[in-house]
Length: 391
Image (cartoon, rainbow, N blue to C red; front, side, top):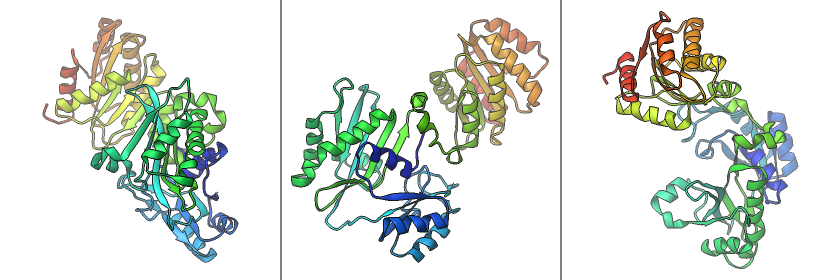
């Protein structure tokens, strides 16, 4: 679950991470009141779940209440387009108004904590080149990023903070502030069950103070049951309506751009393999949709509704391994959904596993036009052909 910048900074501040004084604003009047409280110069920041807001015109400096009012009127309701939003952009519905920081003599750094899946441990990453896309830094100068892995049992140790600060070229007062700052960031990462805590830029002032000038926090959805208070921070307006609807039915759905073959699969690994084999067959997947191992008829109907709500879908490919989800249960749900929803696009089905013969018989005897593939490659070729493509 993604958070807005003002929410991320609130969580970090609660764990002792220094952040600029600021307030969220949902209206022009609230923005003016926030500026009056934090003082000038003030920074007005559009709040959307995407980076690159400054380049897109979503971060502006104001030196008076009139400027704040003018900027707030222009930003609220605007469609902000960045390299992360795509050409469709995002509607700005809230702002962060915070105190401007003295940048003279300051350094912009980068700091993040996330899980290194190859190592199976949290990793704290830092770079002296903050304020730019870290992907760009990693591609052009990998040595500019320093890393230290953390033993979850031992926790983050002070020597690791000093090692990072030394590698970032810090000394004196700024070096001395490394331990409390990085330790607090790691504490926030663990306390909130975060998937990512990223501070970019991390401002190291002329006096040696560390300040989270910008912050991004992504929470692990699987751990939200332990944080009912954090669930309240979710902003559904920033999420795809189809992904929100899928979540209501315990389905994992991600829309893909430019695809025409709607995929319904059980298991994330099989879903990834299905998308790969569609590409190999000359087609393009329209989505990732994992119905899970124990899907029922209601979930299958919901999955069909979600797939067909995408106007780009010309054919549906169902690829199921019958384990917990038996093939006959799948067939029953698919037949009911096609009849109930009056599905007009071709449906290709490939099923293997528990009760697959019974499932195939049910599809064949349904009187509906299902196309079945024996293997994944055959099913993908059928789907590409059914969608008007050349397999």
